[in-house]
Length: 288
Image 1: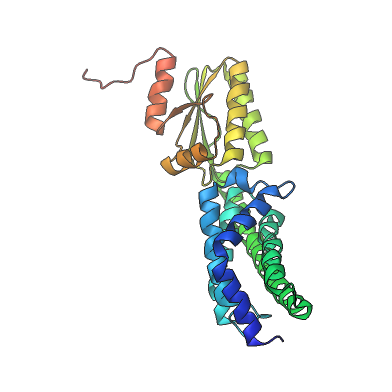
Image 2: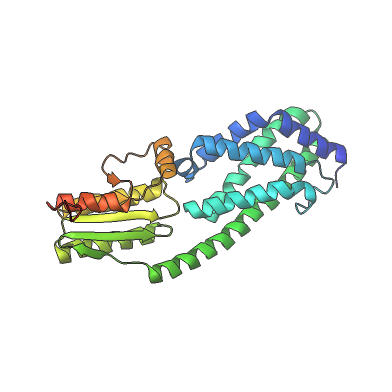
């Protein structure tokens, strides 16, 4: 085990260079081949996450037991990474994408270590060993947490799908499809096929997609919805999208997602009113 002074020095290096480290870490995540982090998470959020993790790691590296992340000094770092893994799972990331984003910190820290310890090969070597042991263990935490959360989400989604409402004909010429749970690529294809088949079989001219019960609405979900809308238009049906939350709308705006093709309404009631209007119907009180 290395001396406590070396651990403290690494902690001080992280504290001193945390802004630089966070920026470099984000750039490495962004540049990683096949990574979708910047597509699904805005830069401001990622900056807050990386800086909070660096603060927690600075505390963890003060521990004399750097090779044991169950040590109390690492509690905050582990908690933050578990929260991050949970959030990533809900947004549709793969476990390898989440773990890789953590492992990208190695190269960022290596640059700092080389700059500070470059004239002392033995100290540099020991510092790299410390860094690798800690980050490798933390990456495993993200993988294990992600797997547990993802299994829970899949189970919950299967239960939700068993009780979910299929495409419903609510008026002659108008359909309603309330969506629930995470929309991944496989499920998105099922949604498109189910909706298009029902449009053709019923001859409907309007379809309402309600997203109120969709927990994560990001660029990938948006692209799936846009594909559904485009396909429906080719069959002569208009699609009205309802239930996009204010937070989701802000996130999509920050990510630069073009939603101009979508006809949206704030809630299901206003969406139904718009749908009836497309059919030449009017919603009003009986006494009017």
